[in-house]
Length: 457
Image (spheres, rainbow, N blue to C red):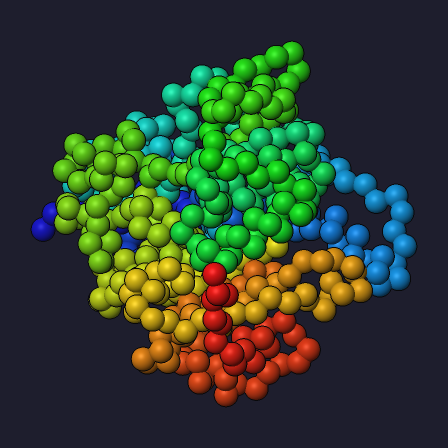
């Protein structure tokens, strides 16, 4: 019988890799994990967690304004970027230490090194130059931000990675992109007082989301001071004295302190040796896997963003857990990629699950739409003229709720609860028979009775 140094070597200590390592170890496997940067991966170190902390910081500006309507007098409030970044770094370090402690507790050996696959059952640790053997390899290296490499001056731009470590807050910023990261950072910087321009090549930001969400959040962001420019791209970036000059595709120029690209992410597979080991990759460099996250090489698996399936932290965690249960726990399992709730922490916030209206009409033909727009109670005394959107999409044949879309305060919290009901197959009648919790915004989800009828043209 062949002897291996380890039962499992995980490459990448992000959300998916960490969960897989811990669960595999709990099943009795001898596990090692290699990470060339920091324990925690994209989400914890340079993604969801620090971003949400910055989102919280950016919301205080609006909260201070709203407080006036409730009788509060606030004077002298000032924001200090270095304090925010320093406190954010302290929290990230605490989380990293907690993850490291968990690995130690489960006796997972950790290597602070880049790792390269040298064969179906072998991995080379670059820093010590040591090769180790393993029964299984799990690739969980995540992704990295894309830069527009053909644009003149692109090297002068930053990505979300660098945005978390800026020494000073930019007074003016141009953000290129129209997805989660671009829209969220536009809200962060605008909320903190930065003159913010969001540039997107398409006709409306947040492609792939329900059209009502896209239109309403775009209007609300503009009302909150974000300048949204659509239909154009960056043609070039140049440094002029102490500022950057960005030339747009229509010839206009913008003078800013920072240009940030948020135009997508690509799987981290370059230089990992996967092709040499016989692992098939997609044209974008993602690892091709089956339902159990197994690659085209029987002993090599991959989970998370590196597979280019659904790039969300909870998905990577579920995939990593399912892998460990299947391979080491004798419990065949796989991550269910249907009905996944997601949030966009723009200002206002988006929470969504299921089909968009356009997708539902393609799938079902006729659909029933229930939606409402209203001003949240908090905004009445605050004098803020911003509407919340709630929308349910229903299959008229089965009466099942197949889409739930919310825009407004606490949208993510609301949709997480709605996701449980939808995962259980809840119908519109189930929503209707649920007693409302009053006064709350979420009660609108169970009190909408009238089908939406498109206005006559």
